[in-house]
Amino acid sequence: MNGYSEIEREKENLINATSISLEQLEKSKNETLYFEKQRAMNQVRQRVFQQAVRGALGTLNICLNTELHFRTIRANIGILGSLEWKR
Image (tube, rainbow, N blue to C red):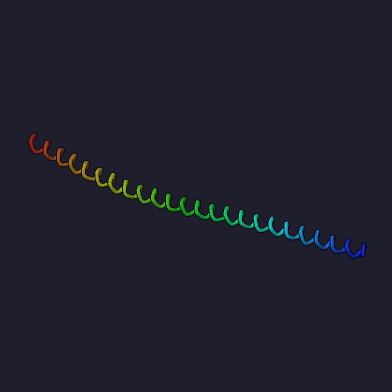
């Protein structure tokens, strides 16, 4: 019976070691999934921010171009007006 008991003890030790390994693998898998999820969310945030910045820059450029256009027109009108007064 002594040999049989030893085999049973080894079997139980192997089962326990396997169970611990599986728990560690499950924990590692969950950590990996968590970090991948965080990475994906950060990438989405970064893309949304980049698109918002591009949109803001586009709007700013349009506003600046419009303002520059109006200032040029006003300056030209001023120049033409001063030419008329000189005649």
